[in-house]
Image 1 (cartoon, rainbow, N blue to C red):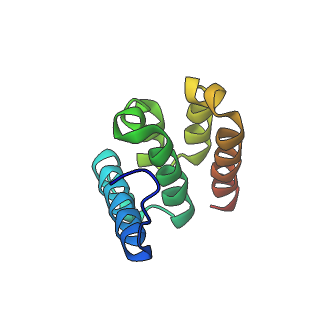
Image 2: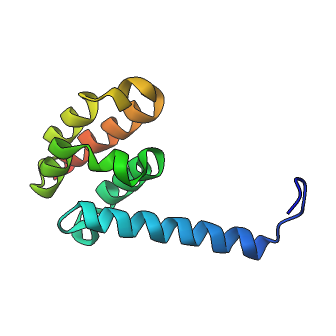
Length: 106
């Protein structure tokens, strides 16, 4: 379609829902028991997945190990110890803070 073509609300929702499903499916492949992680951890990981893509998040091996072990502080440490943290500092700092809050509240 040419630039400026109007897109229906239904099509926008369809594309959004497909993107969300793809991200969730990706996370289920990368994390042992993604669907049973605390909701806040799922949201943090999904945010990272949207930002990094599947292959980018797949490279966070120590982070994924910490999450799979339920070690939220270690997961936050691994988030900080990455190029991603320097590349998107505002997003990364917010997500690290959220992960540390999960650790405090468990």
